Amino acid sequence: MNQKAEVRVFIIDDNEPVRRSVSLLLSSAGYTAESYLSATLFLETAEVTGPGCILLDIFLSGESGLDLQDAINKKFPALPIIYMTGHGDIPMSVQALKHGAFDFLQKPIDLGILFRVIGEAIDLSRIQFEKLNEKNAVQNKVNSLTPRESEVLKLILSGKLNKQIAADLNIAEHTVKLHRASITRKLGVRSVPEIIYMIEKLNPWQE
Image (cartoon, rainbow, N blue to C red; front, side):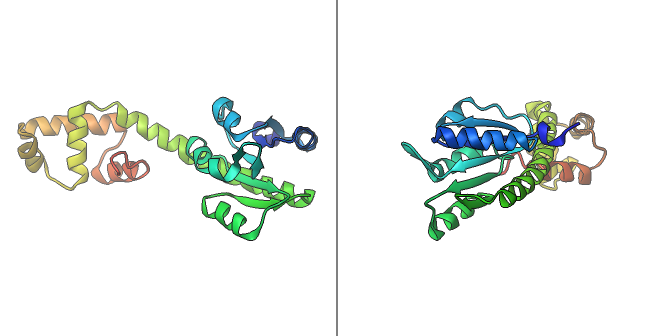
């Protein structure tokens, strides 16, 4: 199976000839490419289900790629952003990288550099998607807890003993033990260290 075809490269550029030429170039290299004339349109319509990356023109009609970078990162956290520009400068590239951009390429882009950067971005995206999927699996398990079990779990994570949890929640210690048994069963763990290790991947109550 072609691993390149399994991922998608999203091209965001308001120049239609550029979108077409880059799409053809990527397709000829075995990648699946999708193009959008604006970052807003991408945010509103793109469906991302697997690894990939974004080629984003920093100057778009009516909007700035930099201005929408945070929104893209928030909605698609596992898609590295590679900026393309023919007018970029050093301060702009520094700003983009500080906000989490993967790379910043000047047009005309050397094809060797382009494909190298895309390959590296996709490698990172695969890792991020694995972490994201793992996090979602943990979240689903946590979501299966009842409100009372969630309260007990918080107190377990704070280091409190069954007797202390019972006092805090004004319930019997035996009831706490029953809740703990249910929590470990639903989370698929057997000990407090395992619970801590799992929740550290998620931190659902972190501010």
